[in-house]
Length: 245
Image (cartoon, rainbow, N blue to C red):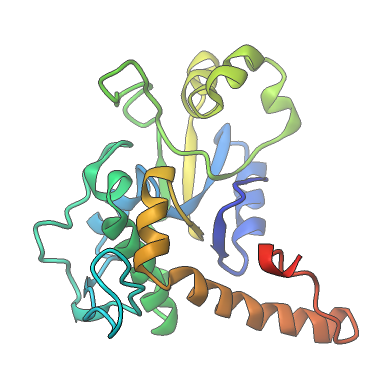
């Protein structure tokens, strides 16, 4: 499994489900169902997994440049604000360029987890190459078919990959050019939900204006405590936070 280092949530059973699908041999690569993803975020909106959530009031003592907002407020089952319409392309304004759109999709996942309705993210299978290869472009010469944040593969899947292409642009090579040369498809598995923290263009805004990382960390530490008690005699494993190393 290839896992980006900024994954903040992995649903129970996501990895074994991906492995089972990969072993069926239908697809070259099997991606997780990634929240905050260049392609799948639009799919999440299209299957009505993203409710209408709105920013809460700015906390006292904060300002618009450093809001540190708590959980967004529920307004309804469907997002009706026209400023939050996710384009079906990998370099979208909403989600890719805007921190508030990224915050919204993360808030939607956390809201669903709290309400035990995260099953609505499960779209079954989504074939990234159903309409062919290199179908989307950024206007300056780059095309990728999906963001490879978290996917299952076999060693032999890379036997004939262009390693110079990987060195130049690993995501384009793995997500688009390599499947195209092989004439095989990649798929996202709906029941394997994970959260990808940020694209670089979103990160400053997410850190300055949300408490999302703190809330993801709180969820993780429940699991860490349980693992410590079950498997490590009560001893917690290193958290990995830079200030605790």
